[in-house]
Length: 169
Image 1 (cartoon, rainbow, N blue to C red):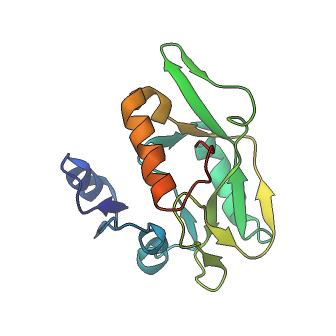
Image 2: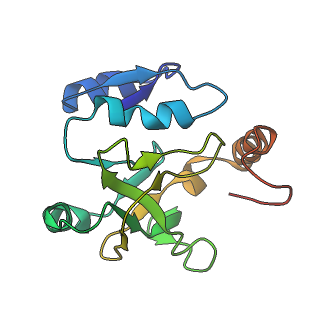
C-alpha cells in the first residue's frame, strides 16, 4: 500500500496494520513517479490499483482467483460507478460516468507497464487487456467532496496539464 507522505490522518497506521508492504511517497506536481512505485515494491504477480476515494464491489473477492489464473491477459479493465448517494447506495448510470472503464488490475512487469507523465492519465499496459463487468470500482468522490473541493481539484488538474479546457473529470 502506498501512502502519500503528506497524509495527516490515520492512513499510514491503518495501512501498516493491515498490509504486508507499506511505503510512503511524495505527491509532487506529477503523479507518474508515485503511480509507478507499486512496480518497485509489489512482490506478487499482479497489481491492483485503487485510489483513496475508491473501493471495489464485494463480487470481486470471488472473481479474483479466476482472473489471476488466466494466463492470457496482461491487464483488466473494470467499470467504475460514480456513487451519488450512500443511503441508499446509488450511482450515476449514464454516460460518461458509467461504465467509465478503468484499467486497474495488471501484471507486475515493468517492461509492460508505464504511466504517461501527465496528471489524470491512467496506466498503459502492453498486451491483451480484458474488460471485466462482473465487479465494478466504486468511486466515492462525488459523496465525499463538496463542490468547492471538487472545483479546486479539477482546476489543479487543468493547471498541471491533465485536462483540456472545458473537460471535467
